[in-house]
Amino acid sequence: MALATFIVAGFIDKFELVVESRPDSIDRDIKIKVDTRLSYINVTRVELVFITKLRQKLSVFLSLAYSNSMPRGSRDPLTESRVIGDVLDSFTRSIALRVSYGTREVNNGVELKPSHVVNQPRVDIGGDDLRTFYTLVMVDPDAPSPSDPNLREYVHWMVTDIPATTGASFGQEVMCYESPRPTVGIHRFVFVLFRQLGRQTVYAPGWRQNFNTGEFAELYNLGQPVAAVYFNCQRESGSGGRRA
Image (cartoon, rainbow, N blue to C red; front, side, top):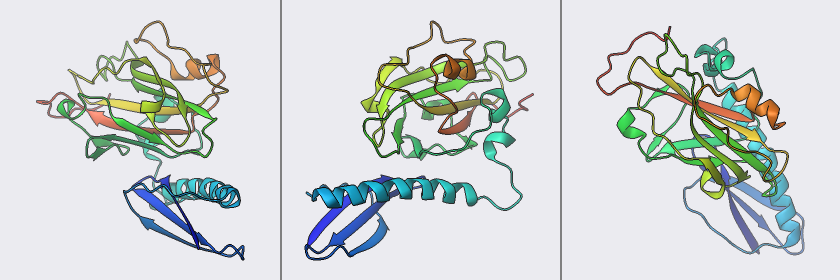
């Protein structure tokens, strides 16, 4: 009996898909369990094709499951926070995007302190083909202050040429990570993922301030985002404040 194991990047955890097949049969027993360990086992070409197709379907399924997990009648957190509007147009999420600072995972609207985000985060993306590349952009639409964002958008990080199924560490960092240090009010820090037309087709802007994500996407024919997530951050001694 041949055993094939691979990891599908999920939204809350990593899902391990175990596929078992007998040489004399095309029947396969499939089961999914949560696991954080990586396993690599040789598989036949037929099994690999089967796994790749199943992985693609699972990625879409998990995306839809995540979107549908919100209570009926609730609004999309990206819309509620005005990330849709201030930074992005409405889009359909189609790729898994997982961002974490150490043990702290970035979920829409979570509050992180500046001391939590000093070092660049770990970013894992989904997909199913290593020949497909993505661009990750991290921006602050509330710079220098939510009441007067005259530097909107401020780029904190940009990584291009990230192969599908990998992470930002496998891409090309074209703008180094600048840790958030808000001084006034609550700032939104937004991670946006785009699918590239090909490798080495996206380049860094000339400066960080007054960046426009939509115009950037149009310039490099990136289309609509495939994923996005944001967190809130304010000065360590901050006591809140409206995002006016």
